[in-house]
Length: 478
Image (cartoon, rainbow, N blue to C red; front, side):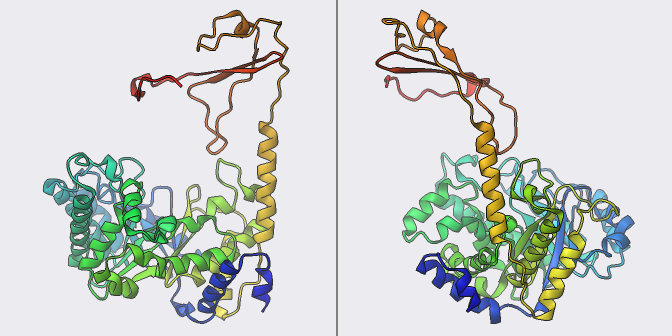
């Protein structure tokens, strides 16, 4: 009953949905003993580096990690990996004695220079992928981990594909689905009962999953940055063996701060996502695609360049939030949750945010005990977020004093800033860069303001440092 009281003020629809998911969370999730927390992050984490620090790593309260295989991990890059380079890393893997880290993975990056329709390009993809699968098999790893984010050329965006002008959206979907099946076949040829862990799959399409019009859903997919991922997923499912596991890592869970977000995401991955799965693959999806959740160290512990709500939390509150998130990420995962940090090195003794290890251990311990995490951070995070927004708005508030123009001195509205009125007008301070990335402006935006007894006049000049990319559409003036 206490759960329902905490939801007072939500619409009846949301309350009903939350109640349904709470029933699942109380009794329908996988046994807690099977839950694993996998570490992934920045830094040089090749097997040869890990081999030197495996003892330190395996002292952390984690269950495995994701490593990078030089050259081969860039499976879509269009560059054929050197087998000798990979062989040296496989040898390093063989020498690691895994103890507490029971589930380890090789990363697969999606930055792409390949053409889905080129057999020659795809031969390079399967070459690199096979080397990763061999390394995972020889090194006693649990499987491979696909990060679909391209960090460059995008293999998933249909309008950006080399043949988008001559091949239809449907043709591209079918080709990507074919390649997805080949991708899975390549992995399973080298590994028995592998796990293909991913950082996200269909969880990224939250807004599209509930679109009732199939034609409209397809139209939006054809324009979406990751629009070809569902076709790839269906290809994986076309070829998947019964004992293979695929995970959807739900990267958007980086930013959750209450249990409802995790619960709703689980439902989305297990049920709503079926709208993007071909009917013939839905039974396989239900049986073999696991829901997973993510934890973002930098976001919670205020290590990002941008200023977010965690900047206003104390060190103790940040640790509490991470303990809360660890518990709920694991509880609402079928088996795997993963933890990402850009600026920390788990193999260094002095490089971890204060309280993080204890927070993880506490969250895992509470879950294993069968108890419910009692930490509540929702109101604290909402208050902090609102305070950040208010602070940012205040810092961006600027004023200017504008003098009244003499009678008859109104400027000509012709786009020419050379007349006398604009010379007398008040020039405003330069526009500020968007606060989202804290980047400096490349091209300045300037504005002038004047007024008389009848009108307010505003002139804006926008510098454009890349005029060669400007395209003029139409000739009419408005």
